[in-house]
Image 1 (cartoon, rainbow, N blue to C red):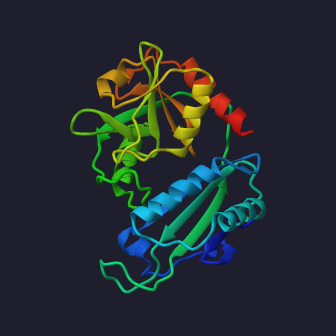
Image 2 (cartoon, rainbow, N blue to C red; image 1 turned 90 degrees about the vertical axis):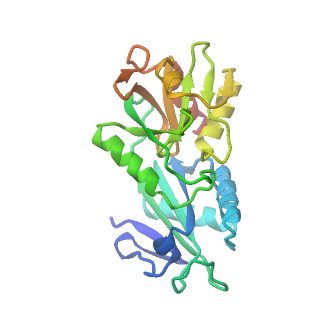
Length: 278
């Protein structure tokens, strides 16, 4: 069956879905996006994603007249029409179509595109390799902008090294996050350590949900920057996102993490997250 997409008020076959050549998302990367996980036909952490979407829009002064209720209706219709049980929904809002000029246009309606696709979700997952790379992004990483070229370059570098993720490092030697995920470690004191929310990272909605789950399960959580050397010496490393959920990292560059096996904390938290959402 053909996939169905939503483009500016219309439900269209995915292969026929398109936007104007002068859409500012194409011309300038002038827009934001969200990715929402679907499990058992349910939208996971939808309210958190919508809240972050509104914040990102506000930070770039982009008015978005569509309500949370309408967005949820669009998502649910795409879940049904694409026959998705487990999958991902991608939403993108741009400043719309206007003559190419750097300044923001006036009286131009924003453009909205939503797509959906099925994915395989498993309770357990194999450990993955990650590499480190310089963080070359702009200073407002907290905005979920569609300007993702530095992330793409980092991810491609990971692919060239047969790695799952690229872990981005600031000039001071501290880790920010992955190219498309947040990074966690279990330190020598069995604390869960992840970088605190700030303009330096995109604070993940999965990260926020997992923080709540870990707190309920009485894990000690510390939010602070940590270095590549600390990550190498960790008992466990794992990344979180709507797509990765909780994915263990068992190798960083050429170094195995601990004994090179998937650790119990990552597996327990992945299982708890899936169970909680179910």
